[in-house]
Length: 443
Image (spheres, rainbow, N blue to C red):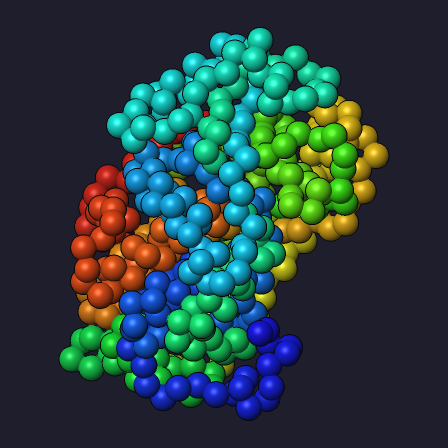
C-alpha cells in the first residue's frame, strides 16, 4: 500500500511500542525491516514520504559485483544469493535477472586500468574476465563503434527499481513488520545514554533500537542527535525508453554511455561517470574527509552552485523534537535531471548503437545519491549511543547490495554471527582517526 491508497485509520496508526524502529523507507530500510521481521523481531519502518520514492526507484537497476570496492565484494556476493531467493521470501518478483554486465573500452591498452582491481578480487572467485577486441562484439551486437575490448561478468544482472523497494517492504509487512508512510521521524530520546524512544510527527514509539537508513537525509538526522556522519550528495540521472527491438541484452557501459535492458523491452539509458555536485555547507564541513575521493574521482564530478546550494544553506540545521523538522518540510526529493548530461548521453548511445536512433524517451529521472568519503557504506552501531545504528552512504551502490546490507544489519542488531565481516563498514572509522581509503577503481 502507498500513502495515497491506505485508509485514513490505517495511515494514522503508529504503535506505541516496538523493538526496532527503522528510519527511512528506501530499499535499504525496507531490506532491514524484512530481515528483522523474518527473525521475529517487532519492527516499525517509518518513511516521511512514500516507500522507495527517492533514489531507490530512480536508479539504473544494476545488480553487480564487478567494479565494486574489494571491501564490498563479500557482502555483494551474499546479496546476489539473496536476490535469487527474494521471490520466495516476499511472495513477489522484484525483477531480478542474471543477464551479465559489460564494461567497454575504446582502446585495448585501457584495459590495464582494471588489472589492479582484478588482482584485488582474485580471492573472491568472481567470474569477471577480460574480453578481447576480437570477442567484444558479441556483447555489443549492432554497434557502430570498434571497441578495444572490455570486462564482462556473466553472473551479474539487474532488478527493477520501480518494483523492488515497495515489494520488499510489503514482504516485510507479511512477516510482521509495521510499515508507516507519511511519517517523519524527528529524532530519538535516550535513557541512561541508550535509545529508549523515537519521536515522530505522529507520536512517540518506545523502542530499544533505531536504524537510520535515511539515504541523503542521514547526515542531517545524525547531526541533530550529536553524531558525525560525513556524507555528501551527487546527482544521478537516467532516461527510461519505450521498447526497442534488436538492442543489446543485459547491462553495459563505456565512455559516455550506459544502458540496461528492462523486462518490458525498453531501456534505462544514461552516461557513465558524470554527476552534478552542488557546493553546499557540508562541502566545507567535510572537506578533509573527502580529499581522497576528490583525488580519484574529480573528473566525474561537475561542481556547481545552484538551487540546492541555497536550499541547504537555508535549511534548519537543528530542531527540537516537539518542532516541525526538515523531513516534514521536504517529503520527497525530486531534483531536476542534468539535462545537458542526458542530452549528451542520447547522442552517444545513438552513435554507439544505431538501433537507438529512433528511441522514444518516456521519462527522465533524477535523484540524489548519498556518498560516503571512502565510497563504501556505514552498516554499524554507533559506539557513543547504544541502540543507535546507521545504514547509509551507499555511494550509488545501494540498490544491488541492499538485501545483503539488510541481513547484515539485522544480524548486528540481534547479536548473531554475521554472514560477512562487518568491520569495513563500521561507523567509527570516520571518528577514530582511521585513514580514509578510497579505492581508485576508475570504472
